[in-house]
Length: 63
Image 1 (cartoon, one colour):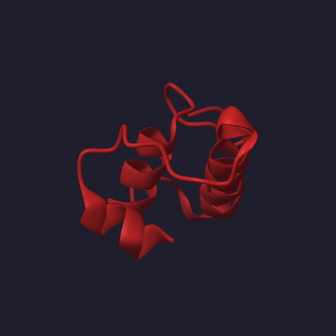
Image 2 (image 1 turned 120 degrees about the vertical axis):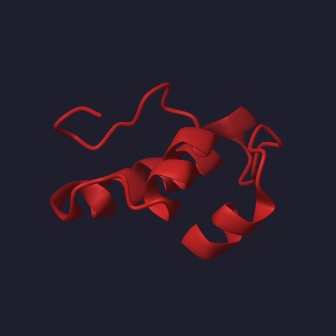
């Protein structure tokens, strides 16, 4: 994770799991959530989730 809240490979999966598992310090959680929303919006120019995540429950909890 960098100082701006970007996680690992900057994928939806990385953000969802990091947020769901409380792996991020509280001071960067909001920025990481913003990056997750950006990743969803920017994917192929459409607002949708990518099927790259392995666990549907965490993404439902985070969103």
